[in-house]
Length: 135
Image (cartoon, rainbow, N blue to C red; front, side, top):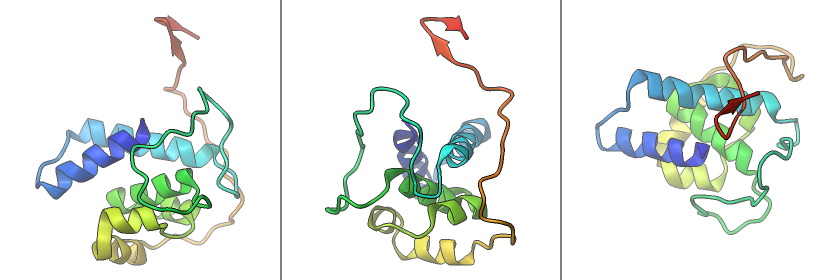
């Protein structure tokens, strides 16, 4: 889902249109949540159907880490240096989506110095919904 949303935000911005601030903030919050779950190797807990589905497959390599790619795209879209740090480097997919402007945006995004260890994060507004029942 996050890839669909990121591509929609990117397409809108490319066309000179923007989604509402609330919508973009929600996408940015989803990226921050993903970053908080991801370990140093780019792995996240297996949640959902584990079908490894993707909206786009712009690279031929099997070694790309899809979660890092999402964070790299988010770092460019939202100018978020923490996402850039967690993504590591630009993958080929992100290069295709953003072109040279994306590379310049990542290079200009500075990150405050802090330890590379994962930071604890709380998400008090989060809740699980299943069949209309809140958990």
